[in-house]
Amino acid sequence: MTISTPTMTPAAIDRSKPQTLGLSGAWTVNGMGQISPQLNSATITPSPGLKIDGARIDALDATGAWVINKLLLRLGTQGHAIQLHDLRPEFSHLLGDAGQQSAEQTAPILPVPTKPVLERIGRSVELAVHDTMALLGFVGLSAVSLAKCIPHPAQFRGRSILFNIRSAGVDALPIVGLLTFLLGVVVAYQSANQLRQYGANIFVVDLIGLSMLREFAPLITAIIVAGRSGSAYTAQIGTMAVTEEIDAMRTLGIDPHQMLVVPKIIALMITLPLLTVFADVLGVFGGMIMAQATLGVGFAEFLDRFTKAVNMSAYLLGIGKAVVFAAIIAVVGCYQGFLASGGPDSIGRQTTRSVVQGIFLVIVVDALFSIAFSALDL
Image (cartoon, rainbow, N blue to C red; front, side, top):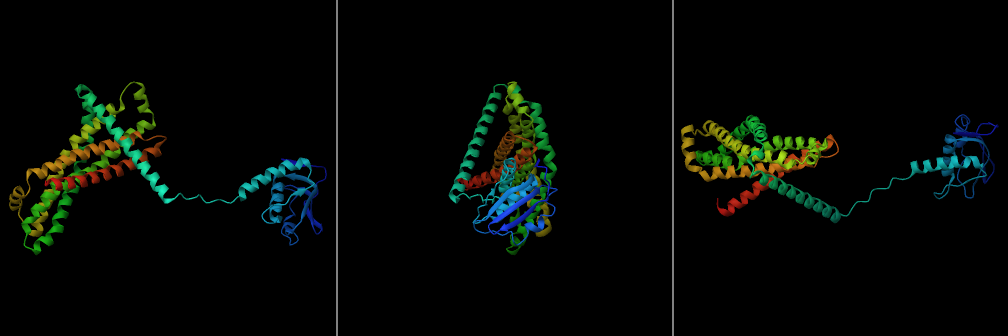
């Protein structure tokens, strides 16, 4: 927007009086071509009581108004801009708009005040308690949905359960077998040097058998399944939540927990103990091979000692822990999926949280099992 009069002389600045600075001519894009030397002149310096006279400004556009406001801010004293006097009324609003934009651009960015440490800790604890209560509520809803299916076995959705058994169990056999086999090899190799020093080579059987059956096999299997199946559950349910399929199921009177959560929990509680048995066999086999290679303990000698050193309780404790781990992984994976909202980025975020939270809870529960078993002398 340009407001002008018939007189279109170039923009100029003169200081005819010591305390008066006069602006004249066309303060427009085309009229300010020669004004730069005067703007940078040593005569354009702040001084107390300086008056800016704009009566002889013939034309003004947004560019000129911006330059004049910058000049007023530069000539101001003690941080306060001086005023332009005798400006034509038709130019005043344009100069005011440009001044407001200039002030917004030059406004200092104030640092965000940091919250006190106790407040941050309190908010973190509050958020953790809220998430815990929400997870417990989800566990309750899932338990109610499971209980509703017990009087009506046809509602268990056998095909969905079998599909989840295949995807979470059969498809995970290679990776579980390989990792537990290598873990058995590592445990036997690391203990070989220590046992050889005391002539206790045969006790490698006790170490491998008890550690694999009670701790390593169920724990490593649960971590693998949490990364594979737990994340898959979150991604599947999260996609349905983002695309509003879950809302559509509720509208049709279908219980999403009964349809989506219950089959996954049942399938994983069947699959993870079976995977743990498979991991027990491969882990002990890996340790057996390494024991023969490093300590000279033959297969027959290893198996004979194994039946004496490892009792049935160690095997059953590992299987029992696997059932609990399966319930944790399935519930956490489904719960994080229901929290997805907005868009695809939310699905990725909740999937990450599902894996981290699932592995964390599995390790915490495993530690609690160890404490309980020690107190019960199991």
